[in-house]
Length: 316
Image 1 (cartoon, helix red, strand yellow):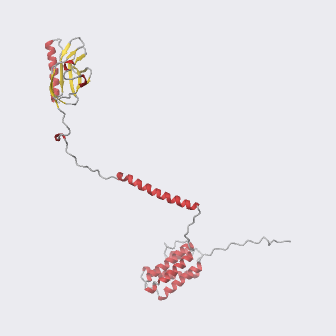
Image 2: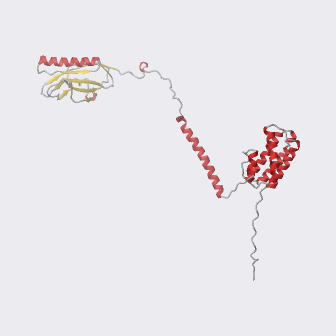
């Protein structure tokens, strides 16, 4: 940068000094940013003429023909004002390694006179090959980016799509089966039948005979709670014993079994939560009471009303 500024100042000084000493003589210059050009790479030469009343008209490039054929001149700009000069840029290319002595060029001015540039020495050097070790940069280490949830987005979308297809297929199969009239083979037993079957299974386990009092009380009260919830539509499984009895007061549960149910639930609660041991007679009575209560409160479907025979018609 400093060299360019120095050259520019020197050119201005030289042009002014020349004009002052030579009167109407106009000076021209040929210069480049560097005296070294690489083979095959574009290289710029700038021509400069001290500004006069009219800009230069034509540049005679024939003296450079032996060094720069026309096909080697890639671009030739117009003459443009640039401070105290008119400048023209020539973009050229050299293909042979050599030291060239470019002769002066003649530039025709608008006044009809001619200006002559200085000779220019350019050294053409071979362009460095990328295969040379000196031009090769070191191999950089692999830099791995941190994982982001966006990296897994395609997999997440694929899994979500697969789940959607499975659900859709199941729904379509179920719908097709309904249309074909395929009914479920699962038969739901009435509440009293289910409770009686579970009480029979509990009796066969003989838990209280084996000393497993707490387990026996937990299972028999669960069976009764489940039955009462299904039979009377009350939240028996999630309620306390007192709450169950309060709910049953709002139903048609028979009063004759209310006291027995209360005693059984109370003794069972003491055994489950207070580790109390019920009386010996409790276990057998609890099983019999539970079965009797279920039998007595089972729901019976009302029989349909019989229609009167059309033959029973009153006649006068």
